[in-house]
Length: 83
Image (cartoon, rainbow, N blue to C red):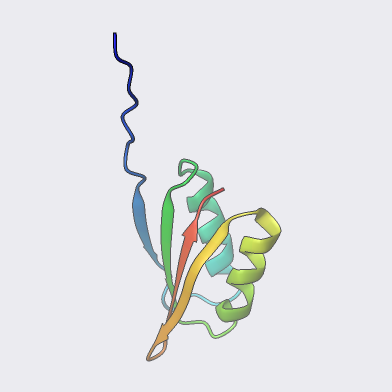
């Protein structure tokens, strides 16, 4: 008998936190990540300039992987892989 594993694709969720100021983007991202499964990807959109510092620090402290960080106009985008 042959055995195999079916890999389920990890989920990708977008969280738009535009207009929220520090510390709310990080707090809301933390809450969302806690509800997600390991390996899932969270895309966070934020307009608070401090998020450029806070979100990478949060990921480092909590063990999540910051896959990418970019800025388009006033909007910051963070792609985070849950630990």
